[in-house]
Image (cartoon, rainbow, N blue to C red; front, side):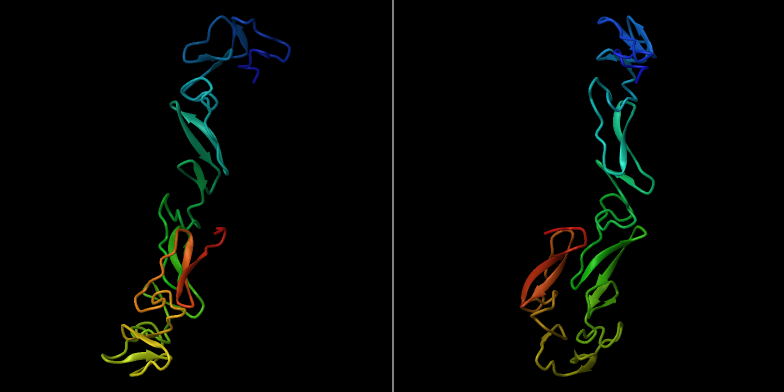
Length: 220
C-alpha cells in the first residue's frame, strides 16, 4: 500500500528515512491526528484489521468471511448467505448445530436424525419409522399410533403388525407397544433403555446394544 508503506511511500521507488513515517503517501516526521505509527506506516488503529487496537494486532479471518476492525475490535464480514458465529461464518439455513441462529442445535430423536431446513429444525425418521407428533415411531408396534399416527389402542391392548390386539407374539411388550429389543433405539436391550448419541449423530440399536451414526459431513 503506497499510502502507508515507508519503503514505497507514494510511489514504488520512494523510501522514507529511518526516522520518518509514511502518511497518506508522503514521508513525514509524524503521523496525522487519528493515526498511529506502526513499523513506519501511519494506520488507523480503530479500522485497520492488521493493526486493530494496537500495532501488529491482526484480526483473524475465516472460511467464507474476511477480517474487519471496527472501533478497535476485531469482527468478521461474512460472505452473502453466511452469518458470523463466534470465529466462524456459518449458514444458518441448513446447519443442525446452528439452525436459524448461532448455537441453536436441532435435538436428536430416537430412530431418526435432526434436520435443518430454511433455518427451522425438523426430523428425518429412519426407514420403517413414521413421524408422529415430533417423534419417530414404528406404527406397526406403537400402541399410541397403531397403524397410523393418532390411532391409539384401547386399554389392555397392544399393537402388533399395525393392528391392536392382546398378544405381541415374538416381540416384547414395552408400555403397551410391541417392540424388538434388538433394534429399537428407544428400548435397546430392555424396555425404556433409550440410546443417547453424541453431538452430530443419530442413535442406533444393534443386537440390543446402543451405538450411533454420524450425520452427513461428520466423521466418528
